[in-house]
Length: 502
Image (cartoon, rainbow, N blue to C red):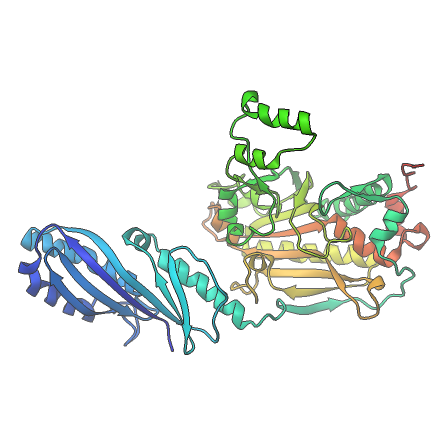
């Protein structure tokens, strides 16, 4: 079967519409031949299949397929009909009342139980999902049915993907290396006093030794990549309001993974006195009481580093000769509520990252991406001497929206860099420790950034996760400097003493 819409509405008028019956009939017949099929292939337009008049209302039943959708057809009808009623009969068209709106769409199997705004029911029968919508004139004008349809098609596509892994295609792989270390690097660093667990979930405190390693990785990135390629440092905000995530696209699916931010309803000490008093008496923090005194979430802690940067450019027209713009940020932590598997520093809720962002014409962005790939290959092969591979994967901006496959813009997408973890065994897990993403027009379009010449703007981003680099490197090389490549050991220098405990 094909996508099908059935829309039943009542057009409310200012007075009895019976005198206009003949005109209405002729108008609807003409509309079925003309405006309701415009832009659609033969047989794929919309049609008014039933109509009736009763007092101050005109009842319509509109049916359609994918093209000239029933609610769009209604909008095509409304204005010319209102003009004819007003001019010839002095009757006003007051409102549209939706009696029922059913969308039938093909699906191989039923979906899980869902709660979707403006959807009264979802039923499955004979290879089709039937949606019953609860929408009115305002929702139709604001294209809510189209967004519901897009959402449902995404969910059906995900289901038809059948729980397969995300798209993954290997692009390059290094030669196998002989490894001398087969321990979990996090546990080894804990045992040596380099690391301790923080007080919060998925959080680590890095001692002097571990911090020194992070700074060595940063130095490599600055000296071998960011400096030679001309990237400029900026500081991006780490609290991200909803409007930024709406523009970046993260608002589509980020909710299970973000740390939410709720401000106090007031900073008046009297308002908070009972909270303070409760703690002073009980030595317990009254979290239930606090929940009553904080406002609605205004957004969340940094999840993906680059969206707040785009506010700097939002709504601006930039001189053509300013491109490509190349910047980076390393000013603070990122936060993600990870599900399961949190045991080491490779998968944490709080992590440290250098975020690299570039912006320009399509050709400039692709060239910047190529340069980054070349520098990363140099670093991982000649300085860190890792065993690694890179693969073309489902773009991060699709994965974060719950989508599989590859990007619609063929040259946009994400390349993941993966390192073997010897302690996981001969055929064990590889760790994704680096990526390079070409994001197409996603961000310039979302934040309304324009080029003086009128050329289409693209962008890219690449996050250097220090925890991931450390996990990959020390899993293969261990903690003994004697086994480290000279290029890394030189940048570390003499390892600092840690803090001793009795």
